[in-house]
Length: 235
Length: 385
Image 1: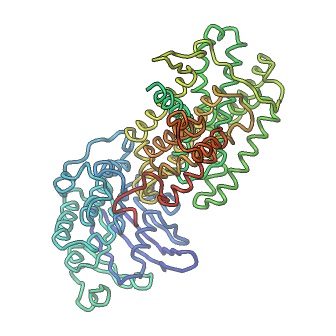
Image 2: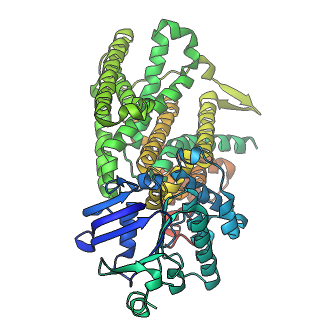
Image 3: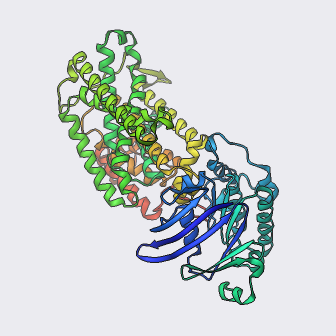
C-alpha cells in the first residue's frame, strides 16, 4: 500500500530552483534510501516533506491526504517523524524533556502522554544514563541517538532520517544502523533515509538516486551496481 | 543593623517593583526576542484596570461589602485586560514582524502612542466594554468544539461569537457608564487609586516601620515569580514555550503549534505587565504616561540580567533596587560619615532619585562594556552555533 506519494515536486530556495519534478512512492513499512552527492537536493526534499519548505509546484500525498500546504506540526501529528541533519536537539532542555517533546506528535500531545516507551532505552541505553543532562551537552553521536529516539516516540508512520551517521564515530554508527533496523522490524514504520555509508544504504529495500535536483535512477538496492554507487555516493 | 535592614528593605521594595514590571518583559523580550515598546502601556492599562475595579467596588451596591478586597480582584482583572490587549497586539501587529526587530520596535512604539491617546480620549467605561468584547471574541472560540468551528458553518459560528461579544461589550460599556459616572467621560487627568484601609500604615519591626503597600508589592512580586517559574518549568505549555524559544523550526517539526505558543507566551508576558500595573497604581497616581517611567528600567533589568535568564532578571532588579536606594537616599554617607570630602560631595551630588537613576544607568552601561551578555550569559557548547 502506498503511504507517501510525491508527484512532480518543485521546490525553490528564494529564486534558485532546487527540486525539479521529483516523483517518488514509499510503501508502508518499506525502507527507502535516497543517495546522491552533496548539494543535489536530498535535504531539500526531506524539508519539503516535513513542511519546513513549501514546494512551488507538485503534490505530496501522505496517507491519502494532500499535505502540501500544511504546517510542519500538523504533518508531524499526522505521522511523519523527522530526524534532521545536525540533529537539532533542544539545547537547554534535559534529555528527558527532549524525549517528552517527542510525545507531542501523539494525539493529545505531551500533556496527555508522560511515559517514555522502554523500547527507546533498549535501543539507546546511553540515553537512560544521561536523562538529567542538558541535550546540548551530549556528544554528536549521543545527540543523534536522542534525535532518533525523540522522533520514534511520536509513533510515526514514516520516519525521515537525514544523514544519521554523518560525522559520528564508527562504533556509534553501528549502533545507529542496528537500531534503525530493529525499529523497522518492530514498529513497521516506513523509512526514508539519506545516507552516504554504503553498508547502511545496502540495508534499504529500494533506492532513489538524485542528481541536480531530480531523480535519475531507482530500483531495488540488490540491483545497486558498483557503477551506480560510484556515480552517486561520495566515497 | 537597623540601618542595614532599612536599606535592604527599601532596596528590595524598589527592586520588586522593577522585577514585577520586568518579569513580563523577560518573557516577551527575553524568551521570544520581541522588542515590545508598548510594554509600559500594557502596565498602564493594568493600573487603569485597578482604578476601574476600585470604582466599581465603591459604587455597585452588592460589591460594597467586599470593598477591602478589591486589590486582589484587580490583580486578576488587570492580568486579563493587559493579556487580552497583548494577544490582540500579537495577532495583528507583531505576528507579521517576527525576525525584523527594527520594524517591531517602531510598530510597538506607535502602538504605545495609540494606547496613551486612547485612554485620554475614550471614556473608560467604553474602553472597558471594548476590552470585554475583545476578550470574549478572542477566547470564546476556545470553548466551542472543533467540530462546530470547521468548514463553512465554522465561519458563521465565528462571526456569531464576534457579534455576541460586541453586544456584550456595548452592554458592559453602557451599564458601567450609567453606574459609575466618573467613567462616563473621557479625561486626560491623572487618577488616584486609594488603598483599602487594611493596606494603610505600616508594620513595626525592630524599630523600623515597613509600609504595608510596599510589603504587598513584594508579596505580589514573589507570587508572580513563583507562578512564572512553576508554569515554565513544570507544565506542558511551559515546556512547549521553552522548546519553541530555543529551536523554533524543530519544535514545529515535533508537532508543537508554534502559533499557539506565540499567542500564549505573549499573552502571559502582557498579562504580567498588567499585574505590574496594579503594583504601580498603589505607589502613585495613574496617568496615560505612567508606563513610560518604567519601560527603560525594565529593558535595563532584562539586559543586565542576561537575556532569556529569569534568575538573572531577579538578581538584576534587586541589585538595581538596592543600588538606587544606597545612592539615591545618600545612605553611603550615613554608613561612612567621615569619608574624604571630594567623594562625599560627589555622592551628595547623586543623592536624589533622578540623579541616582543617571548614575545607575551609567554604571550599567560601563558594566555591559565588559560583560555584553549580562550577568548570566548562556553557557555551554551550544552557544557558538
